[in-house]
Length: 146
Image 1 (cartoon, rainbow, N blue to C red):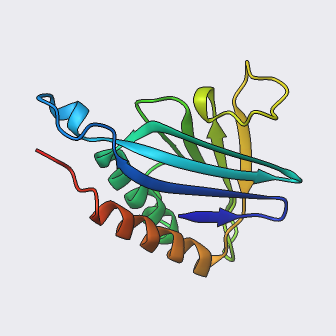
Image 2 (cartoon, rainbow, N blue to C red):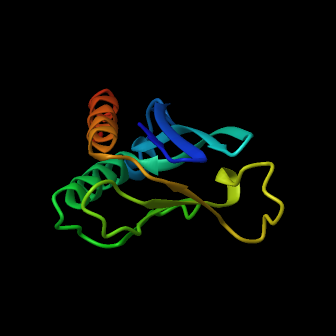
């Protein structure tokens, strides 16, 4: 899933389950996530278990709700506080998302690691639809495991 803006881009890819198998339901559903961020002339890539399968489902539902103008909430956060999303636009054409990058998701070039870095992206309708579809395709390969 990729979202872009005038000075930035954000890419999220599901790489694998964190654990091949586990006795615990929660552990079986943690996903290894790759993040690639670009801001002005700076780039950062990291990989960590940041989201669970059901949190990716929730992210898809939340983005779909924004597209339909019936957003579930202006903000979306997860169990691991390193990643978050905020819809900050009321415009009819295009969107403004602010993506929170904290802890292991904080870019290494960020000067103040005591505060989250907020990356702004502004996808248009087509880019957001493509990003949602891409994330759905990725999640299809890594469904919730009972």
